Length: 130
Image (cartoon, rainbow, N blue to C red; front, top):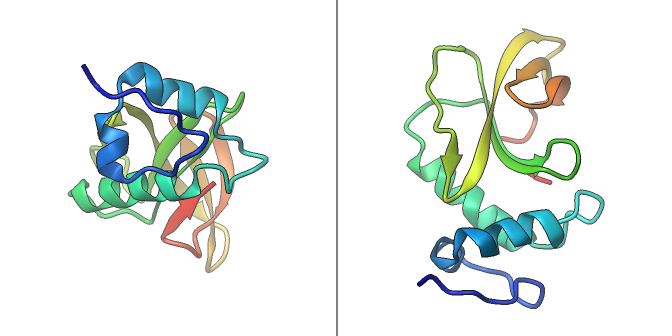
């Protein structure tokens, strides 16, 4: 059986996160992470995104983790080409693929996500933790 720990009092490494049960992970992203307080769980979120970026075998414009409405936390990957294949989840966290529809200026693009619709995204940072 996978470990069950209290995520409120501890930032986790990727290995600690990966060892948690799905139920514990879901409890963390549904009840503890907060898009209005992005510092909560920031080191854990960064560890997940860094491992995802290392394991992903595709080119991307931006990668990260954030809330996509109703505080639904998802990893996300923004790519130029819709044909790029992105996994649906990584370490039990759902993955939201975004496709650049058009560049608005040198750093901003209009991006269509599989979940959450179309948004104007600043691509200045390669990795975004929200």
